[in-house]
Image 1 (spheres, one colour):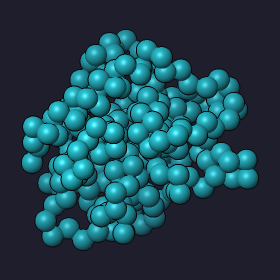
Image 2 (tube, helix red, strand yellow):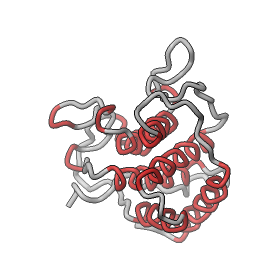
Image 3 (cartoon, one colour):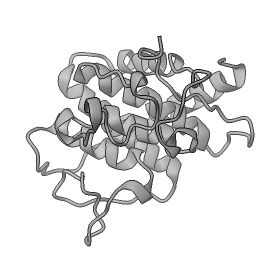
Image 4 (cartoon, helix red, strand yellow):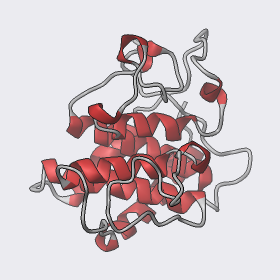
Length: 209
């Protein structure tokens, strides 16, 4: 159930994201086929928590797609904002004609479409009940298909919930889903979010129906 507290936090996060975008510029020298792919990979790097980034000896996550190097962010809120920024730049490569306000409205609609875990669902892994589940789920949607390590039924190995809740879509839609999940995760980490009153919504409806 979405409460007024959740809506207030969503509005605050969307305001922070709106303020970020005019200043958000991806690094130069993408080492993959195009900027959309590069930004999708960078989004996933920041979406997952640092312990899951599989950084190499140079400290860069294994998905990092730019030649200028990975820049760690000091706090989780900042990391998630960076992830959302990369997701939206990746999306803009598909639909450059769309106004930023229209894209942000789609992201906000995607965030509102998130629902809580379905009663009776069995967690696919221990991440399903962990605080970082939304970050893992957002990374799964942000990653291009070729970069998703998958298991049985082409389910991403990072996916934290039951298989039927994984609903791959076209790339434009997947990036909006990823951004919506990141907004929800940002609400949990926003410094002003009152302890014990942060939203716990975790699953995008689709496979659950």
